[in-house]
Image (cartoon, rainbow, N blue to C red; front, side, top):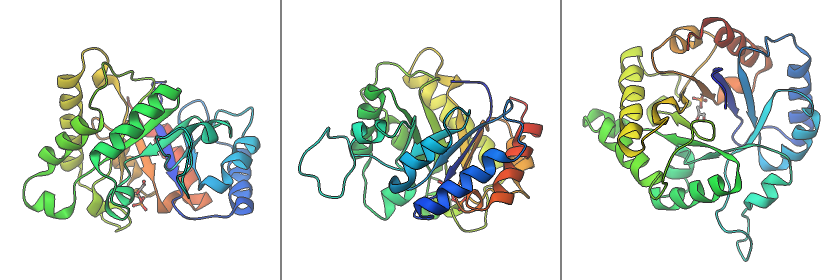
Amino acid sequence: MNSKPIVAGNWKMHKTVQDGVSFVGEIKNRVLDKAKAKVIFCPPFTALFSIVETLKGTDFGVGAQNVHFEAQGAFTGEISIEMLKSTGLDYVILGHSERRHVFGESDTFINRKIHAVLNSGLVPIFCIGETLDDRKAGRTIVVLEGQITLGLDGLDSIDHNRMIIAYEPVWAIGTGETASVEQVVEAHASVKDILSGMFEENANEVPILYGGSVNENNAAELIETKGVDGFLIGGASLKEDSFCSIIEIVSKFYKG
Ligand code: 13P
């Protein structure tokens, strides 16, 4: 994909089509150092097509927040990969903690989505992360290992240009509490080790994003942290000033 840091905004269930289009339109017109960071917007399904259209001809990326693995059929309320592709987007978030914990998605269910998305040519943003109970019980690395090995089960290889991993400790999402630098270093290094154990080439070049209460005040320290290749941002990605500040900080402080 690129060696640029990635700044992805997961809007979750926020913004109408009109709000979303005007938001990305504003950001597009701000002077951002576009050469230094890959920025990806992940709006709700309803806004995808219009946002792709608004961003045509720019370097901004667009992603969905979920998809179903079946090609079509009687799956009321679901969206297929072809439907997503017809909007012109490139990325799909999979395995987000809210999908796992609020909607009960299992590792095997997520694994089917990973295969379907990779087969389609779209790029998964594959989310993993431990709960507070897992961390307190000293099970963080075991949990990450389980999520990665089951989530990526059955893949013969991994292409660092076609896969993004997001480490999002569940206890840091939307809480205002970020993981410490030491915790992030340890988790990201473990993810790289687990990937290298599963796949041969390029596994440790897969970009690993950090997510969980990233904002303009902690972004500099986090982007300078070893093993952090960018961010997956919830709350702060909804506010123009915050999101633009984070993009600028990432562009300035990322050392690669
Ligand atoms: P917050 O940045 O609001 O903590 O959300 C993180 C997240 O879940 C991004 O996917």
